[in-house]
Structures are given as structure tokens and as C-alpha cells.
Image (cartoon, rainbow, N blue to C red; front, side):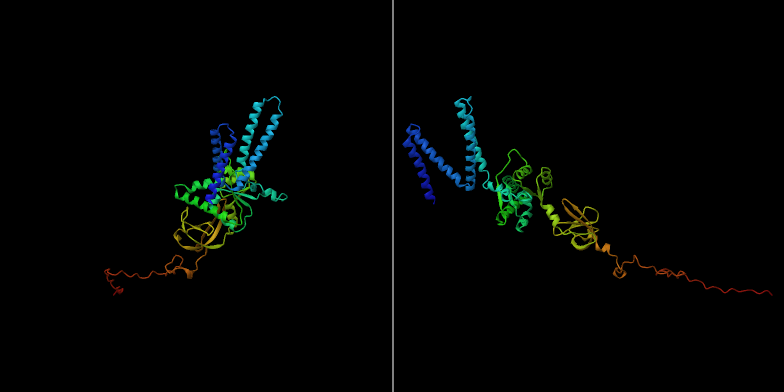
Length: 382
């Protein structure tokens, strides 16, 4: 195959050289040979470049080129109807329009290898009652988070996923970071993208649409979502607020996770594993399987143990849900039979005797004998 390709390229160069020698467009044989060899080499170099590009990009570039040339022809037609413009400036303007508009159309047409699919959502459902966009633009944070791949594998996502090139560049920058934590997060995001592309239930598109005049990635995402009529999928709180202010619909993965968490009501009991100490005095902190934080009062001594707690209150925030509780030992009163034998705090006092008992002197204390009482003698008078 390489030999056939080489022979084909050589034939193109020789054909161009032979045509230049036969027709001699420049008059001189030497310059005609140089022109023919240069054109043949340029065709071979262009063929090398085009082999590395997908065919859809070539189709888009060709359509864009013809569109630009058609616009240039209209410009030339308008200029030809102006009688006051001399022929030389008029010819220069027409040639400039052909070159500029043709180049701009070709570059814009080849900007994305699947550019026509980005705008095909409205054509698929023109009469739908709710004009819900079928495109979802993914943010860098939601790709690194990874839960979007799990949601997609369940089949709940029917929309088309769009990943811009500037998001890929940001992921690559994070993956090349010298810090181990950032590097691992960036590599995780690239692995998640591979999972999304391998998912046959999804249609994942990587688009080259960019906005050079906008520097921040978040603002580029908002502008891209506006042009495509798409939603932004993110778990970034700030991007969520800015997009809503600019009229762009946002899907927040954190809000979805909070909605799917089981409802816990005050008074319910559960068993948790106390993992660490809380911020307040004598508090313990545990976590549920879904990542919900549980704060337990008076559980500092139970760190490293599984305890039963009673839920006292539940706090719902935009960042998640927090559960507060206390140990079951504090909520259930002890019976007298459940108390340890050393616990004498609540034992009833014995009744004290009316008269104080005779105290027994301690051992080693010398005992002084008490003289017996002498009987009283009464003297009678003579």
C-alpha cells in the first residue's frame, strides 16, 4: 500500500512537471519547471494533510468555501453596478472579497467534524410542545466528578452530550499539573470521557466551537449553550448561578443527588459509625453511604465504634444534607435492673436509727476501762 501511494504521488508530480514543460505558462523553460514541480509538491503535501483529517471536516470546509465564494460573487455583482468606481479598484475589491470570504467560509465550515448535528435538534421535533433542548454541554467539574457516566449508563439521559475543545484543554492542563491531587483529578476526568464515548446509548460530540474573545471557560460554556439552545450540566455552584442569571438552563448533579437521597425524619433511629471528632465540644461525626454527614452529640468517646442514634433534626442546604442526632443511651431511660452494680447514685437511702449506735474504736487504739458505777448509799440519821 505504501509503494502504491508513493507511485501515485510521484505520478502527480511528474504530470504537473510535464504539463508545465509542454505549455510553458511562464515563457521560460526553467521557471516553468520550477512552477510545475512546486505545484506537484504542493498537491502531495496537501494530500498528506488531508489524510489526517476526517472526511466530515473536508465536507464542512468545502461547503463553507462555496458559501464564501457565493457571497463574494454577490459582492462583485454589487460593485459592478457602481459606475463611479474605476476598473482597477473594482477588480481589487472583487479579488479581495473572493479570497477573504472564501477563506472565512472554509475555516468556519471545517470548525467541527459533526457541525450539522449540533443544530439538528430543532429539525427533529419542530412541533413539540415544550422546546426542551436536546443538547447537554458538560462542564469540567461534572466530568471530573464522574457521576454523569453512572447516570448515563442507567439510560436516563436521552440528550446529546457535547464536550467543547476548551474543556478538553482544561482537563489536559489539570492532568499535567505537578500536584498529585490535581493530576489524579484530571486523569479521572479523561477516563470518564472515555467511558462516555464508549457508551453506545449516548451520542457524544466533541466540538471545536470556540470564542476567542472570551477568556473564562465558564463564560464560554454559557455562550456555547446560548448558541446551541442547550443546557449546561455542572456541579459548580457559581456557574449555576451565573448561567441562570443569563437565561441558560442548568442541570446540577448535586441537586439531583440530594433529591434521590432517602428522606430521614426526626425521631427515626439508625446505626452509624463514628469516624472523627466534630467541630463542637464532645461531638462525633459519621457519614452515610451516600456521603451525608451525621453529627452526633456526646459521641466523642465513641470514635471508631458503630452506635445507634436517634435523629433530632435534618438540615437541608444547597451543598447537601446534614443530619443531627444523639445517642440512644441518652434518649432511653435506664431501668433499675440495667444499672451497673457500682452505680449507687440513685439508690434509696436506708432509714437512720433513732439512737446513734455505739461506735467501735479502730484497731490499735488503747482502750481505757470505764470504772463501774458505784451504788448510791443513803445514810440514815440516828
